[in-house]
Amino acid sequence: MSFLRNFGPAVFGGVFILCFEIYYHRKKDDRERENSKRAFWNRENEANNVRRQDISFLNYVNIKTENLPMEESQDEEITQFQKDLLELKGKRILNLKNASNTDLKMQYGPANLPDLITYDENYITLINLLTNWATRLIELEDSEAAIKVLEFGISVGSDSSRMFCMLATEYNKVGTPEKTDNLITLAKSLDSIMKNSIVSKLKTIRKYAQ
Image (spheres, helix red, strand yellow):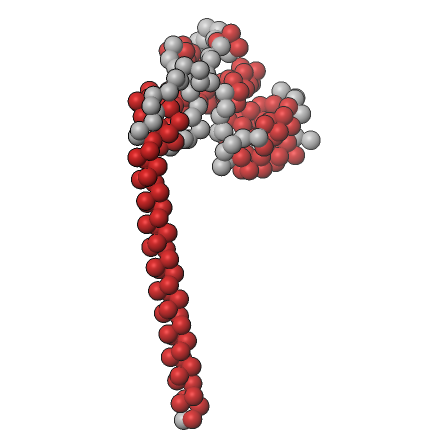
């Protein structure tokens, strides 16, 4: 009984400390959320007052069809990809690297936001088009043409893991696995959350090509 009497205060004290720590961390989290919310809205208000900037000088994607497999094809899918690419060629295409709307307004002004969103959507459309086009070419066992399409996608800043891995695999097929070394170097320089994953996958593909 004396043991229980001595043990009781210790348990109570432990529970009290635990409850205090839970309360303290909850209040701390609430403060941090409130500070983050306040910082966001302050930055948003600041961004909404930025004057329109000149965006004519930005690094727009230049589609050079002479470097791509645009020869007439009997395959309907390939023909459609070529048509879609020519349609995109007449539009402004811009890789904004997942910048938030607030970031874009801060840098270029809110008046430019609708256009910038459209240009970024065109970029996403382009990368999806190139990926699907290359996939179809691989299905048709045309590695040379697929490589041209994939290399173009990489050259305009794609951080698609699928695109990188497809290209490395096609390099293996045509007997040039050493080109994957350049892909690995390029992947390491990407400003992307996908960087480490892409590098790891490329190293595995390169390893099994030796």
